[in-house]
Amino acid sequence: MGDNGLDLGQPVFVGHFQFLVMPFLFSDPKSDGSYRFMAPWIGYGLLLLNGKTWFQHWRMLTPAFHYDILKPYVGLMADSVQVMLSTWHSEWGYCECLCLGTRSIQLCLGTLFWTDRVIKLRKARLQEEGNLEKVGSKRHLDFLDILLFAQVEKETSFSNKDLRAEVDTFMFEGHDTTASGISWILYALATHTEHQQKCQEEIQSLLGDGASITW
Image (cartoon, rainbow, N blue to C red):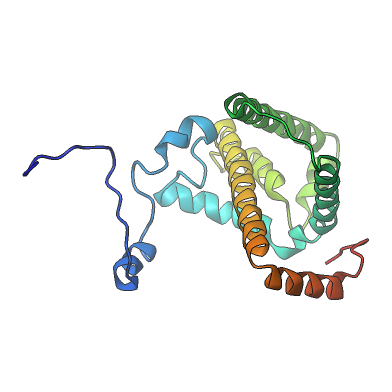
């Protein structure tokens, strides 16, 4: 073809050596177009923001991930795992053909409408007499409470659109990273059964029967 070429979209760099990859890993990974296609879906939250606005949101939301905030959720996560395992067990040996496109659209729409419902319910609860001051006096606020209080404070310009974008971003990133992590762990353990056995023994030695998991 000589000097002729065919443009198939955005150029992709694939590095095979550490010295080639490191400059990219230690630089700002956000380009103008990398994630923009997701804006209509999750809005401009931390994932898509840049510069001063990103830093302001990041500084505001970081306390939500303090370990004192996360401690009470350990029991809830353990209960959720039990529900998941029960579902897997009940579906053992069952085969079904799925229309993934329709299923994905339904799940995405459900997530978007669920976000509005969660925000509305929590805001109504905080607006009840005495609750706003009571929750505001807590040393550590959870993710949604931080966003709602930022909206209440007059010195902030945190709009409903900003709030919705951060909640959607949090829900998207949480589900996506968790699903990817669990899928990879299960695959790795299934292909390396000797390590699977070691992991199982270590977990059982720490948690016993797993009836109650606390932090």
